[in-house]
Length: 292
Image 1: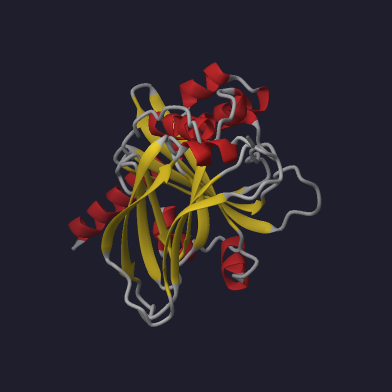
Image 2 (image 1 turned 45 degrees about the horizontal axis):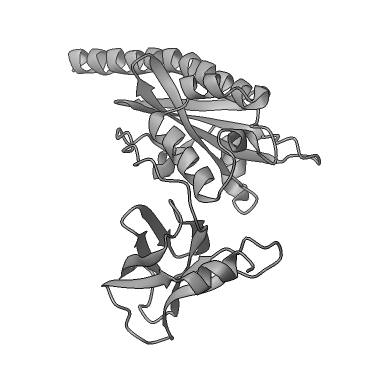
């Protein structure tokens, strides 16, 4: 029994040391990424950002006809500093890691920030840790969790999958061509998960949501393919209304988007679980988008 207790103690001590070594490495990477964003330094940004994230950011910018790389740094507010935040934990799972912080996360937009949660994600590159993304969790609707985290109780993190590294580096997406026509997928799917794929390039997942996402690569002249799948989520009735649409965005300021694809069911109807549709960008549609 003493040997077992000793072994457990050694393991716990090793984990504590590993976390202690992990934290400064992750914070150094995040600080370098944040400074690159503030200085608008594309070269530095490339060095400290995960490859899949770099391609994803570029794809989204060129799919909205934004200037690349200048648009990388066009944020409504600078990334928050870690100064003054309470460090909660740093976890590593193979080539992935996460670091969690609690406190008054300041995005520089004025007012008095309240205490919330910030989870930073990283992946391992050949030269060390690379920044992936940040998840901000507003705790205004979770006062009990806010109280727990303020007291150093990280039970909420232990019960939240998004706060744990999964050990899998996301695949690097294919670099998309700059969009000729900016398009967006809109989905309203209470009680369901809907996955949409446009032209076999742009993949989207919506769960119990009412959201719109830009189509990677945009729409092209002629026929554009739309594939989608649907499934009921736990807690859903299977009788909810559902809408899937694709819109083309006008190049004329103030003009409404043009709806070019729709699949919709009323309450009580059974949705298709897997299906493929299409929409066509004709010369007439192209002229309308350009205001001709």
